[in-house]
Length: 272
Image 1 (cartoon, rainbow, N blue to C red):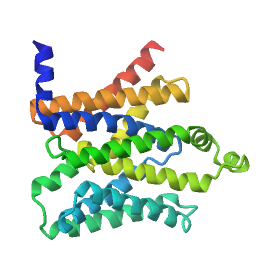
Image 2: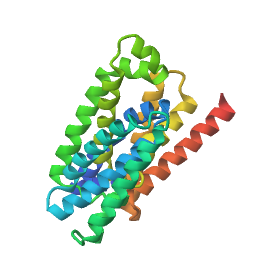
Image 3: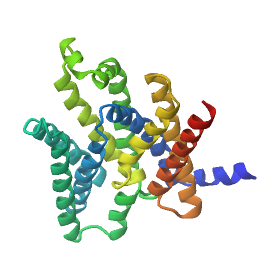
Image 4: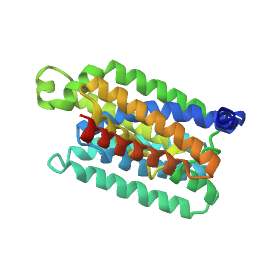
């Protein structure tokens, strides 16, 4: 009986899309997030989410696909972060604060112009399981495959840079280029993840599963595996709760991941 209830939501096309998008997002978010956490760059996700939201608003104004517009703006934001970082090397967080201010103010102005319904805007702020179109699924899948492949190819270099950037430079690794490349991967991940968890919570899906994995993992590889597992479980449970209880999917996903984080801390404290 329970299995029938659980599978009932998959009878709907929009839920099939949501589950597929959730799987993709649940894999790539922690893959990106673990590098951000180890490099203490967690705020990049927030900064690019604000810029991506401005892209969504522009898409609504211009009458183009909001996800595609958000992807383009997020990429521009990634370039902006790296460009500003040259002027504020001793104050790296300033470049993020400037991008957050620019993205949010532009988003507010564009949204205030009145194009698009309130429901459309809220779906990007808090996530939506009914607003995913077939074109969105193509974009999310393409970005997911691209990010997963690139992270796999750059695994050793990213690992080296995470723990000793100066030594990586001495070893001949093109740190500046990889940093820029990685920031663009973060931008792509943020832009496509907004559809599931929303702009306000997308960075949480990158960080919270990684925080849980750090409590349990004994190596970098195991941390990656555990964080992806936690993210996938969080997304699947969150989407299910959102469907049956009529909850915002982003909030349901993140609350689930926070519960798993608390569970990981409990296990770490009392069973290890």
